[in-house]
Image (cartoon, rainbow, N blue to C red; front, side):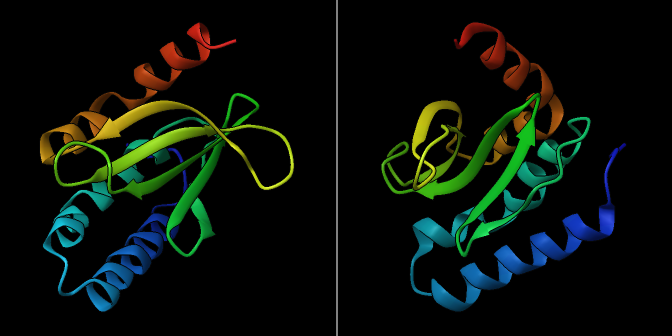
Length: 128
């Protein structure tokens, strides 16, 4: 069960799904992630104290254990693109850090929902 505000996640999910459908209706490789969005956002939302929010038009951000992260679409993940969750380093322009998780298909999105807390805790433990 989510520890954070379910209504905020529902609104954020609607925002991203609406954005994809409206702006990428002719791009199947991007549209296919619509079904992943709620699983990814709910997986993030299950982290204690992490409330995903809209960072930029196409990026969700959240903080966890004093670190910042963002989730975004990346055309270069897998053969048809996917979603990556990456650390945001301190500094001007929110520079990209290391990748926490790449989501290439629905099964990966389901794993994110079910075990993202373990994934990100291992990342934090093993990343200086």
